[in-house]
Length: 341
Image (cartoon, rainbow, N blue to C red; front, side):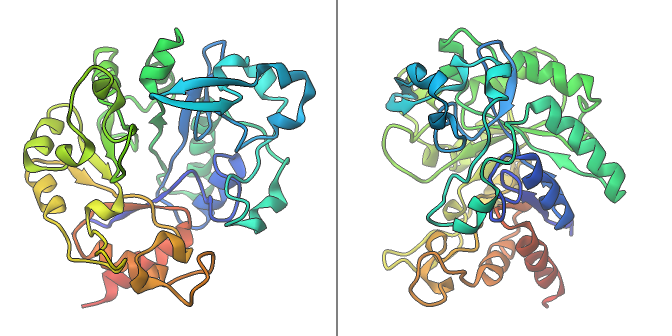
């Protein structure tokens, strides 16, 4: 049986502000197999590593009076969002900002590192990946996500073109490379193939509802299918025509019952494997509030729960890996899973 992958979700973001060089370095030191940068674009067409185009929650941009006039309200995938957006900044301007913890109330200890790191570019993270491979003498994979592709194209930017160029320049444009492109949209997963991308790709899905439920590139054009439609045998068969794997929110794999406890596994993993798709769900976090009630320790939502037991339960479904904010926990869970009869 192949060893399930431990993917560091935005780096070791349970311990450092996400999408920083420090978060990626710590993740690999903890044993992560892959690191995951989210990619957005600057005004001058550079791919940078932020969770969203809007950066007030992940940088100190609000503390820079010289950028106050750039605060704006925009439609992001059909939803009004107010703040500062990467496409309104050049790379040089973004480099004057510093990263901060996105969830300070959940992870106040991470605020120790606020203001200490720049916003990295995708190229810097690709260079870091190779450096870490040499340091630890083992393969280190990278699984970037192009965020809000349709939105950026509407802004006159094309994130897929520099993505393919950089992957090629860093020697990762091959099927066997430890490289997976991921997206909640479909058009861009197809577009990169036309641009010559030869690595693996994965289609992401979440269990929420509302305007963000469904690939925005298709929903915005009237396609009624939501993410749960894509996670059916029919949807998975179509996905297999343009992607190599799926990254479902974990409750697609084992849903919660109405009382908040964990239910029985669905057929998703088996259904996906039957059409040749890998399955790597997200996101496993150590805090109670992110788990089913079975795995809570006490009643404090911010306290650590039984995260190892939760991950072992999911690994038993046959998933090919998991995204976690706490890579050290993922490594221990994987070892327990492999050692238990």
